[in-house]
Length: 120
Length: 308
Image (cartoon, rainbow over all chains, first blue to last red; front, side, top):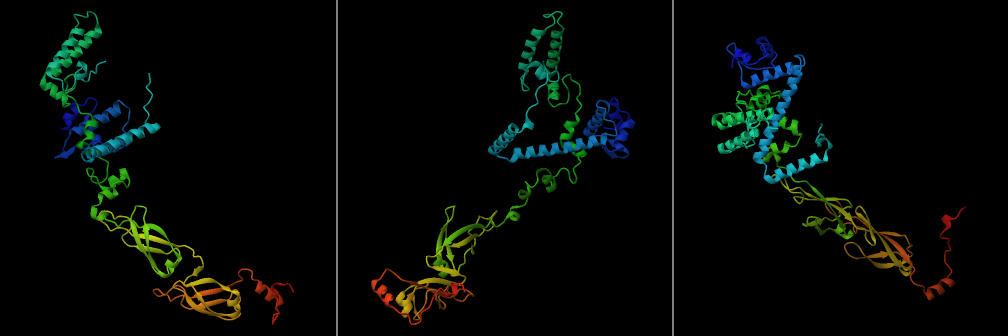
């Protein structure tokens, strides 16, 4: 996807906004032959930045921190997915059952894991 | 309240419902909420509309497929993938903040998340090969076994039986190492050693200091006064020993080489024999003799203790 196409399907975002985000490396489309080529994740990220800015009032000064934390969070989530896939592939059923039992016990034992009271 | 984002829930059918089941579910809802049957009921009208939309989408196999794959939403609009859907997958690596090669599970990445949990697992079995741990046991040996040497049988807590060769001259607290009799090795490594700490039980009449052995030897009054040859027990068997006439209680005699036998660089120790005069049972003749006895050289044995 080219930048004009991305801007066209993203209400509330002007081309200079997107170019500034790219310059700040908040969005990292592939740069080839002087033109940007956006992947789906780049578009989704631009939309996320727009939502943060316009709907959640995260101004552009605070954005780098928010993005850094989000990126770390997703690094961690991908690692957890890796682990979960690896466990799925390698761990025998009985060990898996032990693991689940242990986690469930932990959940019961620890106050932190109590479900929040439902508010009316 | 039906979930507007999910036409399956709107119709109350499972995701793998057949076309027939979908049609039936829709008809049931349509009969219930049809505007002609519920005149003036706005809620019914809306429910009917929702059901119609859901039915329209799910009864078209192409649209249903698109919805199932997440390409369109419940209203049939092309759906834009959320950032989470993108970032959770492979595409998300583009924005990774992890140092190094983000797709790889480096040792650093593992230890960052799990501490040392995977340290051992990552190394090949060869590298993990390690000798077993040494195991400590203790064995109480008889006094004479520790002096002259012996083989003692030791039963370990795990039921194994070890024949422990106690060398001559073994000292209290000395540790014997039995190679390969300790804990099993790891990944094909050699077994550890069994370390046997030797304790020595006290003897009824011998005591020991290093290579030398001491013995309190009871002698009769006659033997002490008259002297002569007596038989003295030693760790290696009884030997004859001469005692001089008039040997007092407490006189110490030395039997050279009759202590702990020579072993290794150690020379044989001495056996020190301390005489202890035993009067024995009351004896009338002895008493009568002593009453009439006039010592040649009268003396007070406690003279040294008396105050001047």
